[in-house]
Image (tube, rainbow over all chains, first blue to last red; front, side):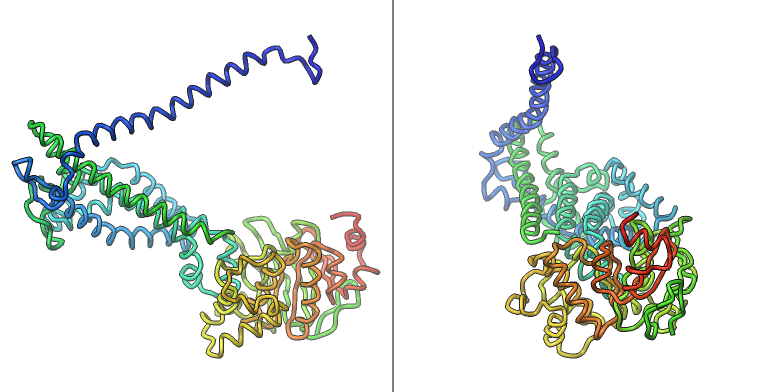
Length: 293
Length: 261
């Protein structure tokens, strides 16, 4: 048979079949993640909802499940993340500005960049060991929320730097050139034009990095964040616990009720994470509405 | 005084910008080679030549914008009123404040029209009335009537031609003596281009304009003097009319009559 429009394509049905099969495979791959997440969430909701009461947020842990709450861990996490933000944002942003706006391309800066990329992939337990020897012991900060925050800052610093750099790099060079050509200094250019343009992306990156710190458990266990704390930190030198540690502690107890408490704790943690991610999305959306290049 | 070059009839007037044996290299590649040129004050000087001939590099050498490119080396001299722009004690920030530049693609700041014009004077310590300065600058750039009721709107909301005039106003606000223009109309439609060309003729009363252009008709229409560059070398520099009608060099003639480039 000769095709009316060109050379014969006898293998067309086979090629179409191949396409259809792959289509299904790719769809299944996509659904795998979503379905697993849904199952996980359903399980957590089923066990956690009955325990999720207002008193759960306002009570300290207890060996009686009915009285146990997550107050110490929630406040510990808030302290931890607040201090981590305080340390990691200026340092991370400063490093990103240096590398992106000031640094010349030479072996030294290339070395720094490779190091940062490698640090971003270092297992968090390694940061825990560093924190233990550097902050807890050598600097004698003890098992304080300050030591925890410094450790977390180190952990998220590479991610913070990389995310901030990417936002700075996305600012078109024509904007910098416009400012330079008007006799602006480098800092005036960065301050007035580059940072405002990059800020939404930087904030999104920072929030996502902090979200990662919220979920981290290993480094906190390493530096000895307590699992039973019946108070909230009143200063940076106080001992503390955090949400993931409290959840882990409850989940490892034999009584069934504590399993429910762990699930409720996960829901609180998810709530905090979703709130932060929603904030990141909102910031991004707000900024994209009125800026176009 | 301007020294005589090949074409004989060279634009008359005192040189405000000059270069002497200026060579600009990107790494090992010389984009501008041994160019010696005098740009007279209160005139429009066009720099023409085929793509990649080094016209933009030559232009950027006059306000030290080449400093931002990697591995750029500049030899010879670029002079502004006889002062070497590359002398060790010269601050490039000060050079760029005095010698304005308008780019190929309009690049207003993503801020209000007012802010676009007022920012540079404000950061360089202007003490006068910013509002008045913004109005004067916008008037000189023939944009005031179109934007006077919406100074708070984003500069990016304007049309391409208006954006480019905003960029000109922004440069004018610093009261430079020279404005360098790097193919300022190549991203604009013919009507906007015509408006900007009219504007050039008004501006040259107060400023010296150096314009790099791909558009030979534009060079012929607006400029007093024309420099023709090819492969980094200055082939010919003279009165525009002469360059376009009786060029001294064969290469110039071939280029302006469209035989190559």
